[in-house]
Length: 384
Image (cartoon, rainbow, N blue to C red; front, side, top):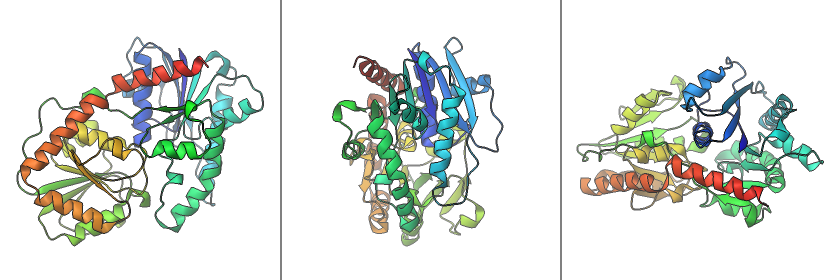
């Protein structure tokens, strides 16, 4: 099949879980013999990578049919709702960039708002192939932290609902995501439930070493209110126990607190460095207010870590009592209690949770399996 994969960016050129997912999906579809055209955004102030640089960064097989089309995302504005405007402009740039080529694709797989303009044109009668959309978390329909988050969510809901209703296929991670999609008026027959995945190169072959000494926690993410970092720091400050909390992400020095138990690593884009940090820890913490199916949880599980995470999005598809602790979003008390329980737990209990994480990834969340499911969903949509 000839597949156009549209996205806001791919890792490592743009950092984020969605960007990692986009890169892996493109590479694995190409490896399965499909002709993949990856259309991806680059920050407005960064140089555009060459196609060979993208191919090498994504580890696309040398004999695969793969094309990279990099487009600079519009410069961010300052007025409320600027992201919506920029997203539509970007979707229009995508449509215009490949104006004469859309009819040559069998399927268009679009992340977020990237196919907004194409769907608009299709709804007006333009002959286009089936378009499948993927909004990873539908965060705008989940609980928001603070007034700013709620206002941003309200502005996003209308366009997201319209795009989902007009798309030929809607991809869902399952869990609490599918009920959100159904509530937007999307028929269940147009929903494909497919989990996220991790590349097999991430999965450690040996069992994790037994826990000893103080508990070591890790948070990986951006410094944004939705990620629950405020609740995490408050929970950590409330505990008198011996532990370490490692924070990985682009946190400005002005945003860092002074606490000898909290260690900041800054943004870590090198895979080997991130694996080293995860391998030296016991428990990942992700106290987000809203999520899709966070890639960082799969990364931590693939390295044999237990997980403390909020029950949002499709997190429950990955985390349970067998491999961690599920907590309520926005609750410092619930988070502190889970951290305390993991600190006080017998090392054998933590070891079992870590082994269960590793086994669950091996069985359910590898890209070879998930890419096959995406392929099957696309083929099924072409038969309608």
